[in-house]
Length: 222
Image (cartoon, rainbow, N blue to C red):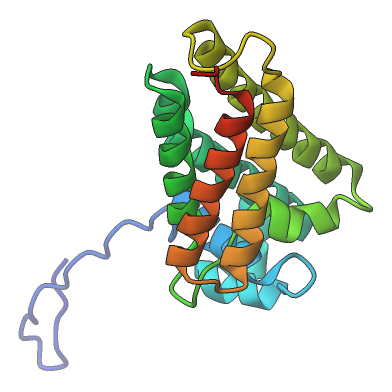
């Protein structure tokens, strides 16, 4: 299009306006935003984490948060599920691969400590033990997730001890379920102490002592 000036001289062509973009582009990555929310909930818990805190952490305003994840409770539950999925993935090969029971337990506790002592602001411990267990008192959905997580861990440990018994590492009368519950209890105490900033070396010593006690009680004589 060419416009004329007052004296009739042609003016420079006017560039056409770019076409309007439909809709509003998504300015965030849902997976990244969920990870940021997870970090915040894991550090501060549910009650102490406000929607403003979540908005700052994720870079999303409240309407965007609601549109992507629902209300704060829904975002908390999705964050907890994400934590469980990540922890399961980190442990999967250790529980599944064949190896002596002592080595397996050592590796499980080492990976657990990697998870528990992580965090830019200091060790965060375990989402289940440190925050979800508190919310489970009044929220039946979260309680179901917590109990399911406990049962899943007990089952995984029991399978390890059962295989060790079948391979002749443990006595025939060793009870895989009892040993599994002791192994799970060790995981939980490591998480609590890590959150209290007990040094990792002390936590590793605790884990080794627990392994020694579990296996000494179930080892074949001789």
